[in-house]
Image 1: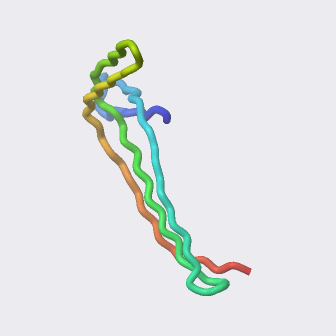
Image 2: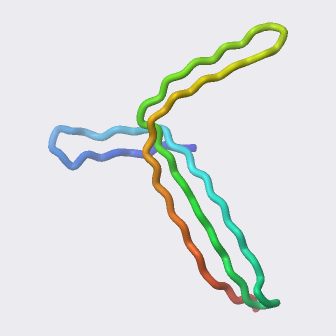
Length: 84
């Protein structure tokens, strides 16, 4: 979790901070005892507009609703590795 800063390059436009989160997934596999392949992907959605609500009732049920517009950035990498 964190924040993303949008810096507008237009004079007098200012800048904005928005809530963002990050997530990633990776796989590393050996093709031989000393050689292998690594794959990795990451995604960073930044929330632009959000609205929602939260409702709880007794004896113990809760409901949450979130509606959001977001901008997503991502990256993917792949490579070989050698161990000694």
